[in-house]
Image (cartoon, rainbow over all chains, first blue to last red; front, side):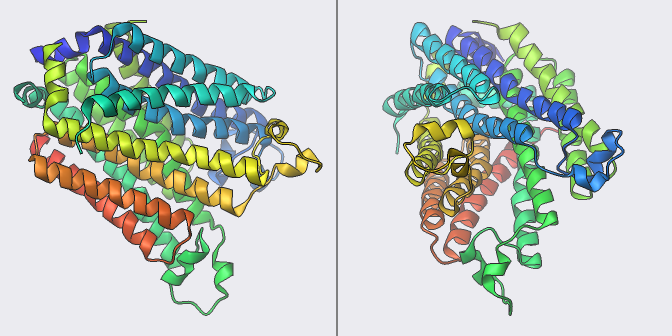
Length: 155
Length: 155
Length: 155
């Protein structure tokens, strides 16, 4: 067990664990935002879910699409497409032994870019704000992938 | 290599590997269920896939949506949104050195909740059964994330 | 830190890091392909994105679905459903200490199958080409999961 404790104790790995967990929690928050909008706006994907709200409407009509719900779901999907690669590449990156300051820069920029991305998406702020936030996050992950490939290349 | 073997030999990490693999296999099963429904109900997302079945119908009409297929796909999507965070947070959690019994409780409750979630979703059981299964799984991952952040916090 | 460097220095783990990063980059490429199609074909999911292109059309009409964009998005979704499990199971597999040649075989076959899958999907090549590529990738991940469960089983 000594080695495992040792590993989780390197500062780069501790920093990775912290920022990865924060950004995963941010991603999971989208599920709750979706549920909140579904319940308050009475918009459902399944007929059995309509029993969760009191309504005088025909329940079948509550199974429908809503622009706000779909917006949150697109934001969640974009998180899956970007945060999951960040965590997977970031884990390998943390194991290549980068400088702590360089690693922290990557983790902080990525997490910041995704929080901004979520705000710009959910509030529908004018472009290119969301595009830039997406691009900065993508570039951060690519930079870590470059380090993994140049440090660990074994084909 | 000694350290790696050592790491995979800690009981918490072995338990994590076992339960993570089981729940990932459950998630991958959804792909096969979708394929099964697409082939038996003759419902496709791509025109080139319609050649996989014998039919007398106009093949373009087989590119359509079907409630049963969409239900399985929503269940699969919910797995991606919940099981992937569990595995990523769970890996970090396993490395924080929790008690074996506490770790096992988290892993078992999560895997159980997701199996129940799948059954309630695919069979369209009355709410709040699916909502509860979803909530229990979410809470388990949040509990592990809390341990990671309180043990490894490095901002 | 010694153990971490040691871990990333085992050949199986280096090979895993390399192939996992390559296939994650392939998955991330789908985001860029989607953006490229959206901008060149002027097809958007959000009203605020329509300001990214010059057009004489009513901007609300640019928020629409397009078969080519949807095809790339389905390919991306299939990547999420298959590449993410590969990386997560593959990490655990690499830690079970498999033979280097066996591990390389798994990693190479999987990455090759997903590149072929993408080509067959985006170019809409006749079935069963895409189905076979999907099946080979799935089988590779299942084979790694089998090794994890038989080596590390701890319920």
